[in-house]
Length: 112
Length: 152
Image (tube, rainbow over all chains, first blue to last red; front, side, top):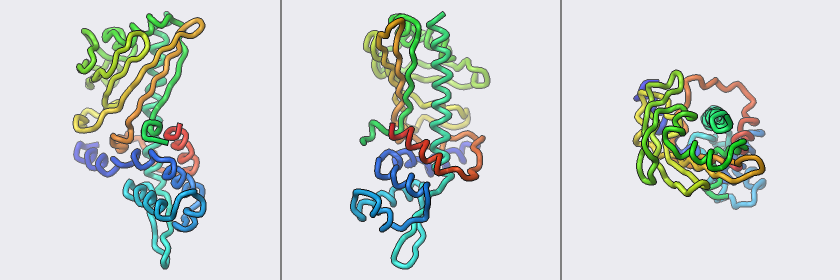
């Protein structure tokens, strides 16, 4: 990856984890992952928060690139962007694996 | 749910070694470097940065930098870093660091160690390997996996 590409990719993806760091937003992404597209109204029915709050959360997710909407009449239909979700997961998985390896080495080091 | 409980990696491991031994392996730079895979020297001091080259095969061109955040004898050790900043041609210095915390507890026959890395919401998620596979379905499951990580 060239440095320029890396920087622009970073800028584009920066809000990803922040967007996922909220229970309601996480639930919305999960729900859309189970089956979309779904309208704002439908998503509101399935949560305990107001439609206004759900709209705000969806817009945060959309800015992070995790979901997108298509207008259908007066409603917006929301869908997950799987690639973005995948990126976040892969990143954490890699780090998690590297910690497993490091801790194995620590165990071997202190237990000998 | 608050920011502190999201976006973190949490590990627990039982080590068959006395707590004082584990503490030394974590907080003596030379020893830390030996299991972690880096050349570190001197002492860790709160507020100071310790750095040295990685010794892990394939990563020898990279430098490990630990900004020591806390040293509380035999019980809590923490530093900030750029988590596995593995691409040499990327300048990570402008990125926020994550916080890595080690907690030690005596346990029968050894030491219970927990490691928590947090603060991922502050750093770019775009730091991904070129090996990122294309997504060909099954992503509802991936969302659940993310949920496990970030809602833990």
